[in-house]
Length: 219
Image (cartoon, rainbow, N blue to C red; front, side):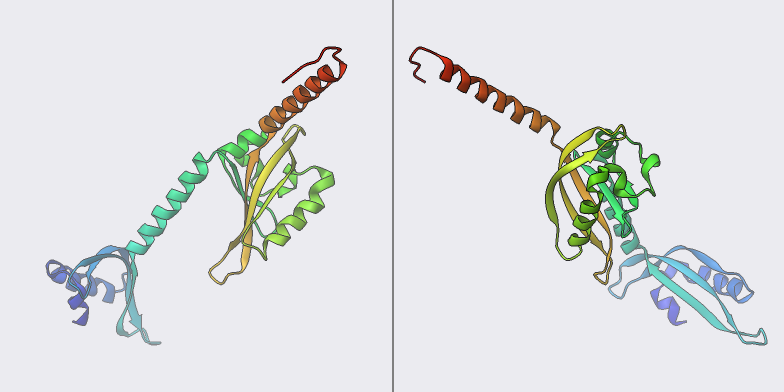
């Protein structure tokens, strides 16, 4: 059998028994190993079944092999990305093309005050003030033709409290390069704005002291 050329030798007898079972009508699906032309073993997912004529007579085998290495690499990549999203200091929110929320990390929960299960499937409108929703949609639409877009704006949390934020948005593209959604990274600027406010107040106070003082002051 030509198939034996890609089987480890110790599996030849097992393969003959498996063929007999498949010929009798069984369908086999599972992870196995096959030999690469360079001699190394490759983990593969195997799906095999018999092929029959319209009369139901056996005419051959259908064997489908899928490289498990690519699947394992993809799973590892997905887990790595998920880990990055979970541990990120920025709020990370992703949506489909209709702006319905698909990803909402732990920082987004803390920043906006809503748990993941409360927002999945809802539109991104829930974090924009009503007066800014049209502008926010235009921002997302403009991202389709760009690599990404940085911005500063105002969002609202679950209690309606306004939050100054900086953000970066980018389009999610499929293998054909067609936008299928968006990812937005948010950073809370509340603390920064408080520091800036304090500095302005301090500078204003110092200016008034200097202007109102009757003494000559050298700084």
